[in-house]
Length: 617
Image (cartoon, rainbow, N blue to C red; front, side, top):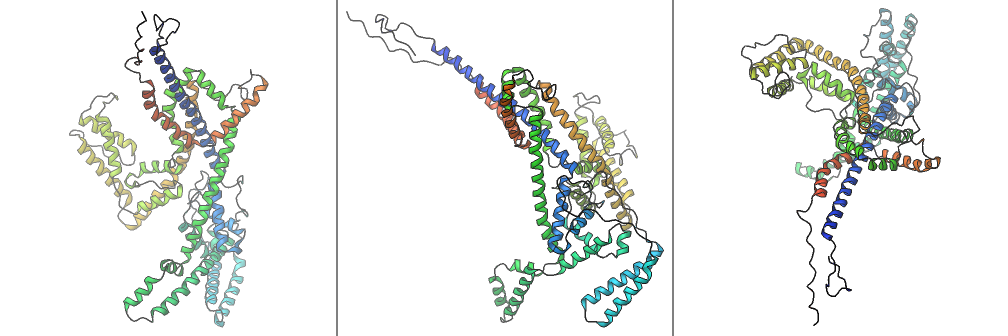
């Protein structure tokens, strides 16, 4: 662009600014500003991601300490019992607590990990026999209420029981004290299981409902709860309204079908009826099917209650973090923009490390039960699961392992670990230097690495190293797997059943270490996340505490108060939001930087000034 000077007609163009260089400088400045703004956004996302992950870890620990999942499951199970039998009242909560505290369902570190053997003393046997006779007589009388002989049998059984009862020792077996729904801060819930399947609850009700009062006490079950279990089963066997209505519809359908003679005509009537499948399903509903439907609905409500509690904890932790650490969003932005060193450290160092480590806290499969399974798998590699259970809880893993133990062993997982170790050592020498090792050395190193990972299977009979290669040592590994398994598993059905029970108990023992490893891992992850910010130069914790702005005027407190409120609101968005945002920003950064920093090959061409007219003569 040229600027013409009308005061100098002789020149007609007095001067021209170096506009092409000014424009280039302006574009470069704008590009640098855009890149800095983008990096500032990434740096801010790093800080918020660390804070939100810390909040998430704190919420996870608080949730475990308060046993929120177990409490909500117990409330849902009690609600199921009250729906089946409205007369059960507060005993529903006692029954639910008793079931979830069973050693096989409880995932607490402090719950008992084995059952004591049930011993029936000789002096108890007459009482137990009399109670069983009375129970059988009452069941028979319930089926035929008018039978006089059955009435006499019941009376005689009652008299026999009354005669032998004084000889029975006094049994001390207090029932659970839980008489109301579990609250958010209720104590005594650490032993509650956090997951259970409807079939397991129904089986317990069946077992307890078949016990007499003395048998229940000797089995560690309060007799009153055994009686309630029996009442629940009887209520489940009674057809409800939908089942009765469906049965009447099927009866009418059967009568209508009798009017037609050929099979084609009868099938046409059946096909013309809408919702026949639902009608048949309701009419043929059994007690377990009804219980399963009610329990499934209650479990959905329990999961919703748990999510509400976790959300409340997240909000409370976000507010406590923002105000306790005095984190002002506006102040953080200013600090990041004013410090190029902090900006570079957060973007180039802290962000990649955070993306590598932070996903652990958000991984739904990273649970104490999963860590226990990894330890158990080291002892029993022939029974690796095809896929990890969806729920990730102790009950899901127990069920999956139980199902897997019923099928044939497979050495694919363990041999795959040997192959992986061989490929690793094939590419490096014994000192870890990237130098290809021979097949013999790689096979030997891979075997010892494999044996260290599976100590129960390795080193029992060291291989022959004279002709060591991958295939020979791999074959030795496969033979050792089969031999050790056959020795432990046995050949008879009894020995195989005992082996499966032992291996399930191994998972119970591994769960203690898995839970401890989970808590330790969360603690180390929190320290690692906060240390990343400290290395970058961001003071996460003010020194001294609550004195971040001690040198500022008191009037600035209100401005910081607004900034801290904004920080609390941003933290309530949750760690998944900030983690995904940071991941997306880091993936976009190379493309954005390439686009922003691209320079033209030469200065932009500018239009030339029009030719001047010849001066008049």
